[in-house]
Image 1: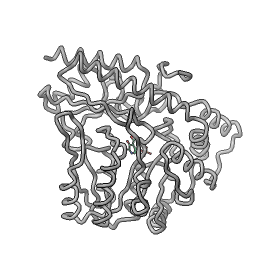
Image 2: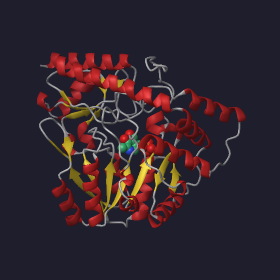
Image 3: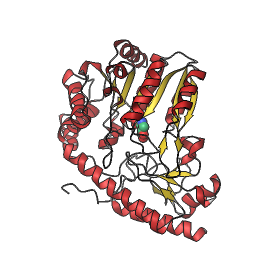
Image 4: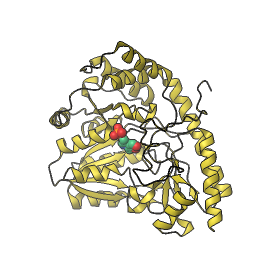
Length: 393
Ligand SMILES: Cc1ncc(COP(=O)(O)O)c(C=O)c1O
């Protein structure tokens, strides 16, 4: 390994949502924080250098993106995920949730139905409801082995019954860790095409994929899928840049792109921040090696968690995720209700995790962890969890 991922940095007093807001969010200071999808690794040196250069120049005035910025994003997608698109089809935005919201505003009408597959990243349901659209909750199915999937008969029936206009696909899927196969994406895309449903593909976790799994950009599958979808991505998860507010929307269909752009403009958002732009350029051009090592470091943390749970806390079940850095752990066999499980995690194990039910009712009894941190933290987390579970029984 060339890069250092083992150092534990004290992120308190840095305005970190993950580490500085325990009191505001009714948690205690001694809980180890693994909830928000934010890594405890410093961003790679080329990004720090690019930001230092901006600061050293001392000008933070208005900025705008150029064609070469859009080309840089495209070339990352092409190099890492084998999908090339025209840079002119891309729009920068301050974040993926913001971008999804504006795409919902631009492409649907108030009262239209938007479908999601739960358990899923909880801002999806919030943004649909806040935009005054009807939320349709498709529920993922899972087998005994905890392998999640879509029941395509139900998926299509819900689309038809509710006259769904947009389906928000989470690919890779947070929190269940699925990297959708080509067959699954084909089924989603074909059903959506046949029923005139636009697919919004949130691919923010695309760079975190393990083993033989391969992230397939939804739009790369066919020209029809390209035209019938909008893709959302960002360097924020991959390089830990969420605080720099830069994300990308790719809409190949001119009408959809114009509608999204209009909605974005209507919010008064016009320019990317000078810092975000500089960080994005360095990230997508100089940091491939860092990303490869980050992903393999996180994978080892995930394997450690899995072994520890299997051997020492067999009451819990963890399936290895195919993608994302967010292991999803089944605690249902403990037989606790929501309050008891919360008491175990927060008060006894002293962990701050995301409880599964916040991703949708079907997540009740699960907990979502975050493995993007130094190994020593994962070891501590597993020790605390083991002790708390075994003391309780
Ligand atoms: C699936 C998914 N989409 C979007 C986001 C957040 O994106 P942003 O911070 O750019 O709004 C996250 C963060 O965890 C996520 O998991």
